Length: 78
Image (cartoon, rainbow, N blue to C red; front, side, top):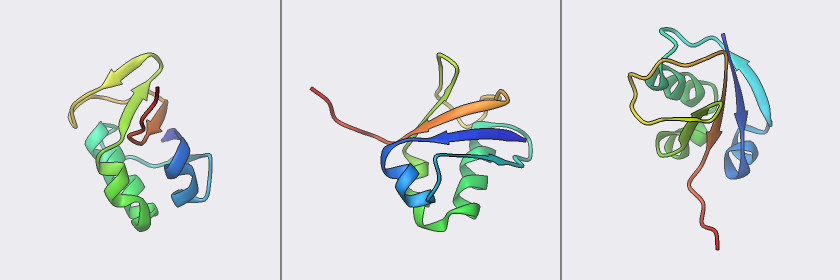
């Protein structure tokens, strides 16, 4: 089980700020698949979102997840 916190548009598309999901294999790729299955309307945004485990940015789909992660969609700042 992985607790996922959603930000910005992902929180809107999933209609929740945080949830706990069963993630087979506990990898970034498995997390993306689990979120997309639970929230089909967010699937495209999940595919391009950053996954953070604490302060660590998990950059590839084979990276192993911790118990809690943050999912951040692309955003602009300035």
